[in-house]
Image 1 (cartoon, rainbow, N blue to C red):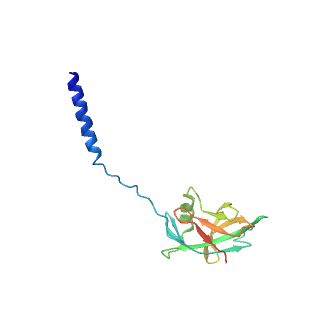
Image 2: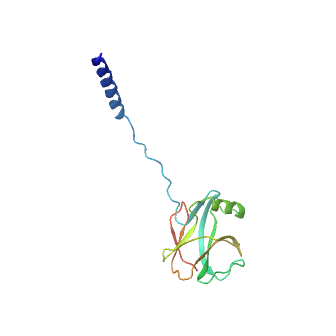
Image 3: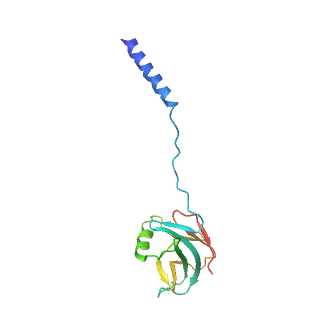
Length: 147
C-alpha cells in the first residue's frame, strides 16, 4: 500500500512538472504616455497650445508671493469644450494636474474655463519660479515657457 501511494505521488509530480514547460509568459499590457503636448481625459484628448503669466484672470488675482500661470489648451478634435464635462473629467484624476517649478514645488490647478477666447487652466504658482513643468496624468511631463 505504501508503494502504491508513492507511485501515485511520483506520477502526479511528473505530470505537474511536465505541464510547467508549456506555460507561456504573457507580458502585462502597459499604457504608454500620450505624445508630447497631448493631454488625455475621459472626454477626449486635449493639446497644449501656450502659457502666459497674468495679473488677473476673470476677477481672480494672485496672493502676495504668487503669480497666476494660465495654460491654454484645446480639444484635439477641434470640438467645442463643454466646461461642465471638462470639470468632471479633470476632477476624476486622483493625482491631479499640477505645475512643478524649479524649486520642486507642485501647484495644483485652481481654476479653469474661458479667459477671453482661450480655454485655460489656471495655477497660482510661487512668484519666484523661473521654470514650469506641466504634469498631466497619462501624459509625459511638459516643459512650458510662458509668453
